[in-house]
Amino acid sequence: MRARYIPTAEIDEKIKRAYSRQRSGDRNALRAVRGDIGWSKSAVVRRGAELCVTRAKERPWCAAEEDILERFGYLTAAGVQRKLMRAGFQRSRAAVQLKTTRLRIKRNLDGYSACALAMAFGVDAHKVCTWIRRGLLQAERRHTAYSTQRDTWWIPISSVRRFILRAPEEIDLSRVEKFWFLDIVTGGKICR
Image (cartoon, rainbow, N blue to C red):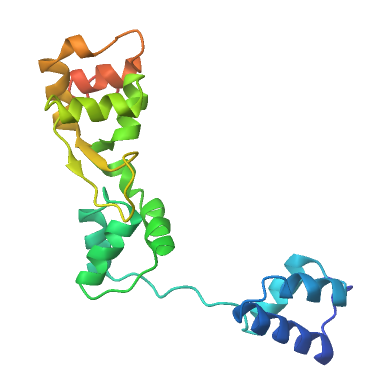
């Protein structure tokens, strides 16, 4: 710690009380203690960690939890959370989202959300939903916790390839992401 942030018993007690008030719902407790003692935000947080009053991280993920995350990574965080709960694990949606990002689960999946596919085809997401409703594009529900039509579909790459070959009249090639399209049509040979 820098010389100007010298902790005393009184300052430590104020920091402990501020963290306690924050856990009780006072969202301005840390800001108030910073103003009171004249320390920067990082200095207060660092001292809180040294005093062991900051919130602890979530427990490490076990192999069984990571397996569930990999199998159902195409679902939303809420969907994966429900799968974990059915298996007896308790994780927050934020923890699921963070772990999905860290493991790059979405990047390794073999498919697209309706919104991602719409961007690749250069169309509105409603157009992709229309293709799904008409049976031109095979997709499955992502089982979201909320009822919007925006991102509730998961479309495997094999279904996208089949759609391109069976309904080429639906695609405006001037709007399609060129290298992505060639990668799909050639089975991954163009971009590798």
